[in-house]
Length: 268
Image 1 (tube, helix red, strand yellow):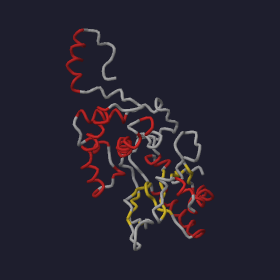
Image 2 (image 1 turned 30 degrees about the vertical axis):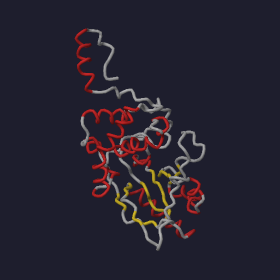
Image 3 (image 1 turned 60 degrees about the vertical axis):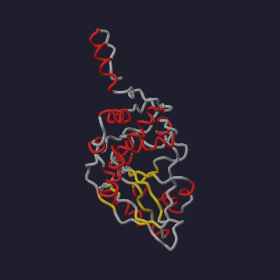
Image 4 (image 1 turned 120 degrees about the vertical axis):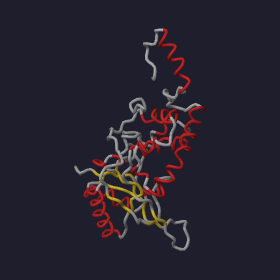
């Protein structure tokens, strides 16, 4: 809450009445279903951020977006609204995955570019280049070792569709994907991690989302990725290179099964 219970003094009440209209009551977000005025604010926020996102997609990868950059295009009301999402109480949302820390977008990382996929529905053998990705150097080296072994064993490799992701970008994604889950914060958090809780923003436990060379990533149908020989190889050998399946079936964290999402854990 923005105002405390000490407002019994008349002057404080008067101040509150004066200040309140400048900041609509967004602080108590409805976790189950955002009301129409908040949904409208989400749409306004995304529209305001659209030029920044487009520019970052073409000139400077979104994965390293900072909080200063994210908030820069917003006015005071919009910034306060976004901060309410940044400050969501994970415990109130029954989030069971551990807090991983805030990823600033300024950590030392390896740049990964030039990955190409050939989507099954594209004709004439045309390929598409994946966006630039980033990983901590030691994780990237282990990934390359693992892919060399996979190539030797089954003649296939997996590409990195998503690696490091800053907490600011994670916040943007959380707000962006609210629409896919009926503007329910409680439902969205089952599919999109809160800032600070994503393994993509935890270099010490860095997550990698894999995609195969034909563009199969499991995003819309997890079984498609689960059926890949590449996935079966990972299940048998990924641990040899320090990679762990983060969210298996019936995971106690409550996160849905993600066969494409693996994290690096040096303890393996």
